[in-house]
Image (cartoon, rainbow, N blue to C red; front, side, top):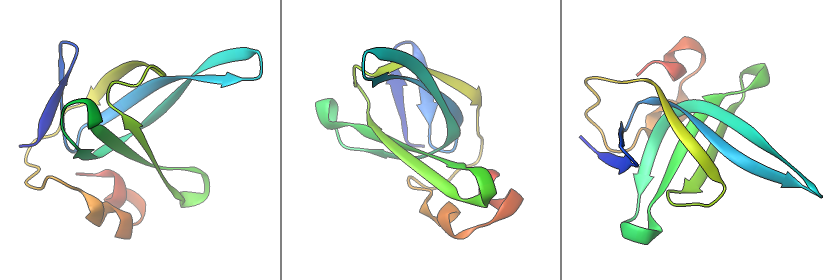
Length: 104
């Protein structure tokens, strides 16, 4: 099972996570939360990145990728742990629609 450690927390492919990232707009800054399924861990060491996919408004799939040790990430919460994922990349979720696309 592909996993990585963030602080004291261990995240695995297929987990439903919430990424709290800091967004700066002009002089103001705010925390933006992105919740979805962890579909990819890529790279090694300093270059490690992860991708999260969610189904947005109108049934449109949205993916975001962050460097693992980015300064803009405030925290990462694991909402739901997964069991039984046997792939390291969950790209097949891109072709699914509806409830199938959010169940792993």
